[in-house]
Image (cartoon, rainbow, N blue to C red; front, top):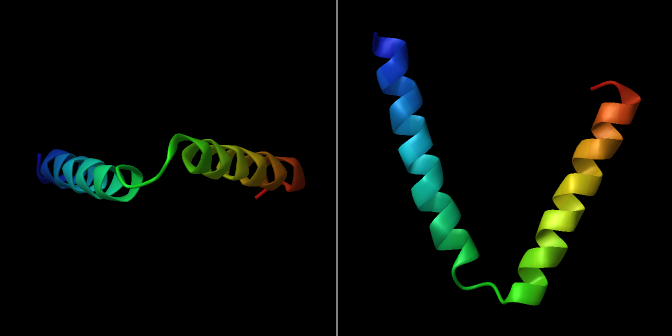
Length: 49
C-alpha cells in the first residue's frame, strides 16, 4: 500500500514539475525538445540500454 502512495506522490510531483518547465516554452521550442527526447529514446533502444 505504501508503494501506491509513493507512486502517486511521484506522479503528482512530476506533473507539477513538467507544467512549470513546459509553460514558459514556445511551441517551436517544445516541439524540438520532444523530438530530441524521442530521438534519444530511440537511440538508447537501438543500442540496447
